[in-house]
Image (cartoon, rainbow, N blue to C red; front, side, top):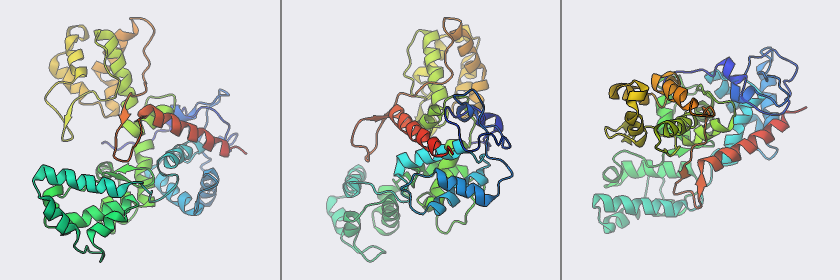
Length: 390
């Protein structure tokens, strides 16, 4: 991931809709396209740069839902995150983050997850079977006392939050005789905190930016705190450039992965041009263990099938597809030529499309999709904007 700052031009176009309490002040920078577009035709701007930090925190607190406890604490942590990330202080940017927080955790710093004991026992059963650890050994080990003084069975039965779950797996990996064999130093808890941040994303992000807080234990533990969860969650959502003119696609990216909405639009355009319809899921390449696989994806096959039309070689197509998780893909020859040619076939193709993805997780008990998530967050976002009107 390369270091990016939410550019002033981007922030000027982001939000549809309502007038906000910075209206008429006009001192702050413009917002990105997906946040700055307003129904009245005017361009929204960030809060005046002349505001002191105390006033900024007060404005943040006023945007929080009325049911939120410790409003000053949430406002402080959000302000610190935005300041460190250089995200403009604006009703739109803060409401975008707050909408995700409300959707993901209802402003719980350590969200309660129903059914965690069953999730853990199924995970242990699955991994024991995979690695050939006899069930009797697992049963005996779980009856032993853990570093907290309680047995592992007692801790599993009492699980309620993701922080407790993360700490449990950390102790099992370090203490149980089969812990490293089952988990290979890999804690299966991959997301957490009030914005459900990926631990992998946090590890990558700190390589590019300085984390604004001291790390007392491990970085992954910071993800499960309010301050760390808000910092990394705000980074995922706002610390990158997108070509969208509607914020709902940024929310879709938060769920499906950065640039997924742009990539889904590319898939639709390529499918139209090649005559081979492609599922607009936002993934352009196949991946194995987090790395691009050598086996061509359906997207790569479709592009190769019309390589002569694109006047591109196989290596050139592969080169550009490898940019799929970056802003640079939008400027690549492959992206440019596909859209230029697809646009000539009829009505111009949109540069953003909703990724069609079914959400799967042990914590999800009904059929949900990325579009469902994005639309729900968009609704919360609009409600937050209304709280900013004075």
